[in-house]
Length: 255
Image (cartoon, rainbow, N blue to C red; front, top):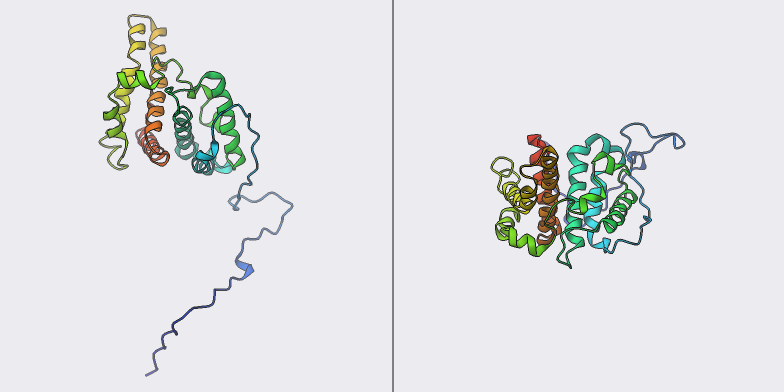
């Protein structure tokens, strides 16, 4: 009977040597890369407007994640599933983050334009597709609250049961939320309450008034997200918003 191999001696082992042959090498450097060949976007220093008073470095990790989810070759392919939900989450968090030192939940129109431009510039400088505003149908007005009648913290907290909203959305179960939602109804309830004034103004009017109220609902929903962004840690807010987006995608709903 052959002898069993003896166990290796204890102690430190020399590092494994990797042959250069296993490192990816494209033999035609002067020609375009073939499909599916790994591409690592180069980053550069963005050209900012200088008119958006935000310390973007505090949002750096969230910016990196969004840029990664919206990289140039993938954004057009998986935009609705990966890129757009993350971009939407970033903008909602940015809206709340911007106004965290004031009682406002939205940005003024002029500042919103500058900040939106800066956000997209930073994302593009980190490898994101520069056409993501068009791909995801987002614009600077998404940061302004639009036609929502409630745009400040004081009025919001007088109108909405804020503690109930935060309790429902502080920790969202990714499995249960899509089947037995807790946070989504709380957001809808808050949205309906802060848009109530608009409903009163629009009731008993023609279809134009009804469409105005639909716009107000969408705008007020953004205000609710802004409030949540002020109260939740950045990572927690992003996780919550992504889970809610996933539920909408699975159900095929838009609001």
